Image (cartoon, rainbow, N blue to C red):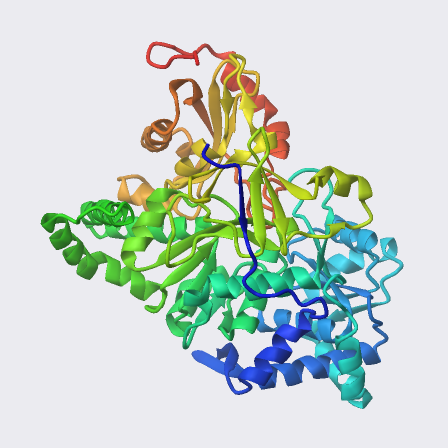
Length: 611
């Protein structure tokens, strides 16, 4: 390890008086007629200018004021990713209130905890199904005075009620908060224990937006920049990007239904995307299986191999051989151009986070002309702490620290962060706050390493490190991510703590499985209970495991696996809202399956159990 700490100075002077609403006010002053949003309109999209958006924000803010919302009041919000989400967000800022976002998939008990712990006094719900969940626990949250439902026209009613509130009152409330004041209270997704409320300040959003816009100027500060948001805005990642877009003047559209994503990409034609690795895996796997079904699977795989080699050579500064150039040009016409068109035809960059992407996909999409800028962050760091930038990125890393951010490694390799993006505290939880900091640096709980230029690589979660009976330390993510990239694999959990060897629990992808089965001469409607015992399916999963095993030492290799006749979802309690696995819950719920793996002896002829 050549360095243990890298600090990136802020490139924009901090403003102690600024708050998040200023991002919109400044944008309107600079470009009032710029299309800042677009909403679905028939088969196309209707633009909403910066000035129009601000007028709508002020009108709704007046409604909140008329309804009795006071500066500093907590207002909870549960809804899908739509234009109205950001409208409500800024309207609450303009009214001086503090939003407490709730994932729209949250259960009644999760909603009860968030409302109770935050002290929210009102709730906005998108539709009847959300309002019903709130109604279930209404007696448990006596502080909630109002529940407004958007589908019932309650936002229109609020706007009408606020018609008598003056512009001066909204301006007074809008400017009350300073940089150090609370902007929002976001609850962690809770992969372990009860979610904790992260207090994010106005300066977290303002300073991070202003500095990130400079770092990513080739993405957000270019003519006709646009993006289509489909990730949950209740998560800080998408919410921060939404604010960055307001600051940078990027046109934003929304698609809450991911089954309609490809059609929306085709009509909206974004210039950049915000996504998680699973989205890129799905795009790749769907294209591969479609090619397979059309008898062109061999061509697609050859094209993918050429794409990856071409990108790797470019990144390493190597000369591209003539033969590779010719193949690349051929496959660009036959394969790559079709995938570019499927994503709208204009996508030049994609920001990826929440989980490791993997070099294979990074290089593949890079050759398509889509530069995936992998970044790293948590709710506690207002999302990004580091990100690759277009002018210089290294596929396989999560980039250098953003301007205004410092990143260091503790003695045990834990990544620690300080800077403009780091949250203030955990809400009403001083013990957890104290535990989260090391001399002013936030302990992320992730293990990482730097290269000589300060590019960070995340290798796993500190609490997830498996120590085998032989004393070998194994980071599960390094094995799980490449296996999960296989088209028929849904989720993977590597096990083996205090066991003689490493093993894995695996679920199949119900969406991709029928196509794969048909492409491999099997019934597309094969029941899951039969699929998990099918020799071809087992062989395909074994191939994925063998590929992952090449990345680790023999002692870290997966020796056995079990296919489960189930699906891990947020609804089953095994995934967080951002689709991260709840490892401790899975280990507990599937303890019998794990015990069965280790009950039978395993041959050791080809894999050493030593270090």
